[in-house]
Image (cartoon, rainbow, N blue to C red; front, side):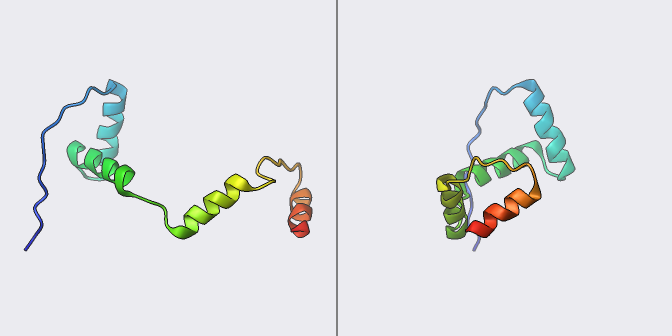
Length: 83
């Protein structure tokens, strides 16, 4: 037996350029505008990063070298060798 998802009609005021962009994106994916917007919203609301991704985000956020800019690849490799 299939789970039936209830839907409720809703309206939003969106910028016209955003609506046009959404329509084009939906068309590229052979979706209706409604289906495409629902797909995007579901991804935003229900997607959570896995443990590996969370750890990588925390490591990047807490890294001492997060703002280091290298002029050459040799500088980068030298810094990596220090670790």
